[in-house]
Length: 440
Image (cartoon, rainbow, N blue to C red; front, side, top):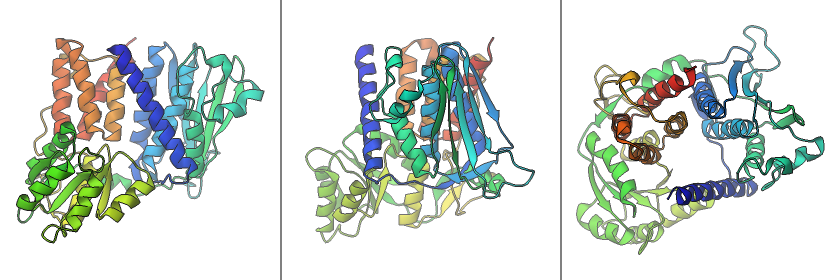
């Protein structure tokens, strides 16, 4: 079973990498620019990479090159993808010594002179190094330097994707390497500072407990019960009336009686897929005005265009992020959220972060729980950073199956995940990651 699981995970990684590369080469990769907490972002990246290095008895250091802005504007997901890939490679190809992760304005700035300056990201390792004549090869798809092939596994796409993503973000990925001594990869990006970021987290921490006005009816259509369950578990506590359907045909039958205000429609399903079901809705007079939001794991632009052409009103990518889904619901249903007292008041409009449960469970001391391995804790942290609820639940199920001593830890994470409290999950798991890292 372990071999099957590992093979499946490797195949999934390969498929995702191929899809990313295809999107980039077809010029269909879009950046999603937004403000994000840069200092927390870098700390989380360093925490994950430090655990990976520790597994190989390597040193790891995160070194700011200059004062780091609290908030910046950029594509957080794609920057994370590039940095984790470069850091993972540095750890994989290093057998002794260590890895250093450096970030900061470069060249160093005079105090207060940040405007228009770029931020450098630099990863140094003491690994095998790359011969000068082979440097260009490492950026080619499905290529690995021959001396390294016997040491590690991989798709051979990571550096090719990273190079192209850096170019899309306005930078250039560079490398300097000396065989048997190590390599340095670096790039520079223009990430404008968000000067008022200090106030942003206050809004993000507010807990939604409901909405003003009459109850709203939502239908969740997906052939995977676990996907339906995750979304239903999010919506029911907030006061939505929810009905589920396992395919397009069932959705059409139930919609006639339920008359939902909005349908969350998976696109790929047996019997009748989301495209055809939406077309049928638009051709049915009594149902033609229902708002339809498509759900799909495909982020290709042509998928979005196809679903809009079929009659969908909007598109939400999978895995579904709770905060993004609630944003779309607020927009299409013109909702006014009610917030938990003491976290922003009731009935206010505003941005939401990851905290959407009305009553978070009390914190549990790390000392009272048996923690999983550092690698498993780091994997959970990465899933929480991505907002992948389904992935978190699957990961804690695997941890719990490893032994009943892990049940309290798994139950705590599971409670937070089912309450969609992503920030609390990150803070909780980080305690265990750091605890393992700090041990002598």
